[in-house]
Each structure stands twice: as structure tokens, then as C-alpha cells.
Length: 146
Image 1 (cartoon, rainbow, N blue to C red):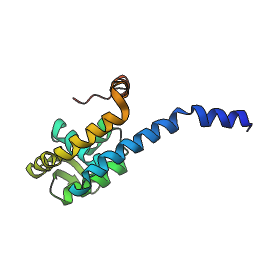
Image 2 (cartoon, rainbow, N blue to C red):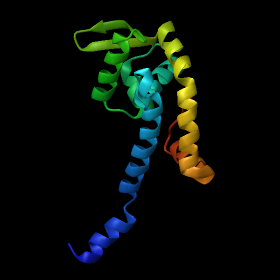
Image 3 (tube, rainbow, N blue to C red):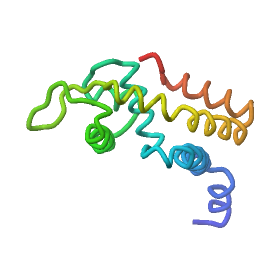
Image 4 (cartoon, rainbow, N blue to C red):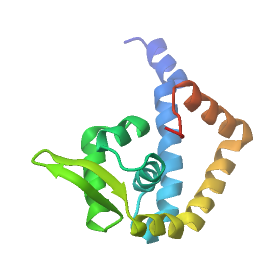
């Protein structure tokens, strides 16, 4: 690989920049939520489940673009805490899950920390960055009402 190729990757790679931004923003939320026993990924699973209503874990994975193993691991933890319930399951795992009243209460309890992280993330990205992220996600098919 030539030096010019290396320089091009180092100076222009969008993938590395998106990953850096993602890790920085995730770190803000996870830091704010640290005292609540949840990560931002788990909060978003709870919120997606609350929005979608009872559904198969695969639907949550599709909505949030998560791998099956990631969904399964996080749902198991949420189930253990009583924040979700398995409405049906079989040898392969949970077939349908639902948000419990304890899960709804957990979402409400983390809102001050989530809002703090939301403000910090918006400050980090700036108005233009926030608008760009929302537009890009929308153009990619992320539909929060799904």
C-alpha cells in the first residue's frame, strides 16, 4: 500500500469517523445512566418495546438494527430485573416479550439522566450535527414509530 493510500484512508475514512462519533455519544449516555444499572442500548430496547407493544425479539432487532445475540443478551438481563416479561417462549428462547409496569417505571426513573446525556450529545454534535444525524437516520429507514 502506498503512502498516498494510507494518507487517504487516515484523512478521509467515513467509517472510522462514524464509529468515533458513535462511541463518544454512547459513552455520554452510558456514563449518565451508570447509576441506574442500564446502558443506553438497554434503555432503547425498553423504549422500543414500549412503543411496539408485545412482539418477538426479532422485531426489536430489526427496528434497532441489532444482531440477534445482542438482543438476546440484553433481553435476558432486562427479564432478570423484571423490566420485561416473556409472554411465550420455547426451547429456542423468548418468542414474544412485553414491557412490564416495572420496566415502564424504570424508563421514567432514568429520564433525568437520559435528558442530561441528550443535552450533552446535542452540545457535542451541534445543531447542524443533530439535524444531520436525524436526517441520515430517517433516510436510512429508521422509523421511531415502527
